[in-house]
Length: 256
Image (cartoon, rainbow, N blue to C red; front, side):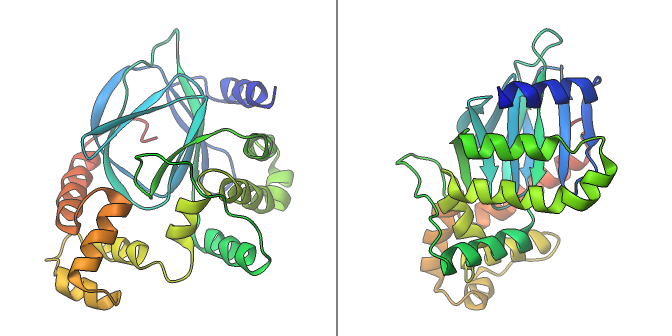
């Protein structure tokens, strides 16, 4: 029932293709009716929750499809190929795009760990540590509905928006994506620090030895942990990010 209400809210507010702001920082509603093949893109730390249709993502040559059964949690910046090959006027892609605020997520991880709050370990799968396709659970669904109900309520948004967004983040950390989010936003996450360094310096020569020294790792350990998190080596990551960022800047449309 909650998921149907979320869909109804999106349908009533997004009548044309594209994204609209909700008034809550980092939260957008989107609609896509164009079938688009996967093309280079960059996933920033986000949650994408789909209530109709499906999206496809390709990461390091592997295809992932997610729809209203699973939401996507990307906890670090990743170069991907993304598309909406099955979207149509008859079967539009509808959903919610939610940026993950690193400061708030880190605060929540610290608070959960200090109070003994449970962060769920993921079920065994082949997904990289930074990219999760997660079953909608009741806690997440209810938190998302409470967040989306603020649309068109400027006073409620101003007074309750941050709190309800924090509630949604908490639901993510308690759910199946909790472990990967903890790795990205917990204190002392060297790989997240390394990725932040790389994405901030794409226009400069990258020295992997210097980066390994900055995060207190040997080159071999950095390479191994980096590949566990992203499926790519640091060099592959930089090349893909540069290529996808350049191509993405020349594309129009819904970057969801």
